[in-house]
Image (cartoon, rainbow, N blue to C red):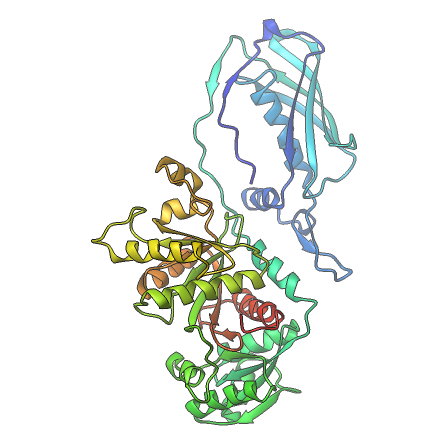
Amino acid sequence: MNEPAKRAMKNTPYDALSVGMEAEQTRVLKAEDLYVFANSSGNMNPMNLPRVDGDGDGKPEAIAPAMWMASLISAVLGCDLPGPGTTYHSQTLRFVNQAHAGDTLRIKVRLTAKGEGRLVSFDTWVETEDGRPIVEGEAQVVAPERPLDFTALDVPGLTVRSHKHFDRLLELAAPLDPIPTAVVAPEEPDALAGALLAAEHTLITPILIGDPEKIVAAGEAAGMSLAGYQIIDVPDHKAAAERAVALVHEGQAAALMKGHLHTDVFLGAIVKRETGLRTSRRLSHVFVMDVPGLEHLLMVTDAAINISPDLQAKADIIQNAIYLAHSIGIEEPKVGVLSAVEKVNPAIPSTLDAAILSKMADRGQITGGLVDGPLAMDNAINLGAAMTKGIKSLVAGRAEILMAPNMEAGNMLAKELTYLAHAQSAGIVMGARCPVILTSRADDDKSRLASCAVAALHAARGSVA
């Protein structure tokens, strides 16, 4: 978002003003600006907010409300010319064109007359970068009487709770063919709804495995039709998970999805040595998180499977996350290996593991990404914090994957981001022969869709990596 300028400002008092003086500001119109305006003003006119075009291409369009653009004029008058100490007397406005999200706007004022009582008149206008007029008008203000120096106080920042990165994932997955997905025990409305919603968005083709009576009842409770969906009658959860794994071996399914059953039962069928879906790497869970205000997706691993991973398990966990990052469009992901501090300390075992993992990446034992650690949370994701600590690294302050020292830390981190930072998360298990979708009853529709989109993008790579 555009933030208020935190700068020293000087005004031009009435006696120093002369006809013909001009001032201008430049601002890029962002969709977030319009959300803030809508919430603060109560103007929820749909034309003022991002919307889906009627032609079905799914591209958002944001049209600036007229009065939001008028406020830009007051910013130039109040901050630049005449500047601090100015008070409005009147303003006329003519709205001649519309501005859209992404437009660069120039806001200009020109002094046209001086009157009694320090009353000053201005021509005012807003135009696009190529000179297309948007707003025209005239303003009268009472100019300040004496010079003022003014340093803007810190204004609380704003973070708009949008999840643009998940929108991008859904756009990337949209052209793909739906992947046949074995859904195990979707016997509750929330477990079934996620699969059917993903089917409606052509992300997956669900094969429902479980107790048919419970699955039908769940569909009725969710108000969703099961017409056209395949249901395989396997009431026992352990047997249902094993049947799902068999479908992958038979080539009938290309992904698995957890329904309403215990995670250990679900994963137990996947990790069986003879009949499961194991690869040379250990299974691990990856949260793909869309954190409002963060300019990239953030991945957290492992927060659900490996309780206290040893060094080799951690190497597998990092490699799994790197492969998933490649699938969702991150060419060379930056992996921050977390600990409580950023220096190696023999009294903190996770710092030793982090240092070794970094060197393993240097020597090609972990490939496809940049790995650095130990890093504390602040200097892993905040460049300013990393610079303050004097850390010279291509990863510090820029991490896209956060490797937690153990499951407890990873789980707490992911849930803190969800419930305190308003992030949305997609959950995927890596290290098996196909993507494994883990959703939670607490997930909303967008999180469920994002999990399926991530699985579809990974399956599209066509390899166990």
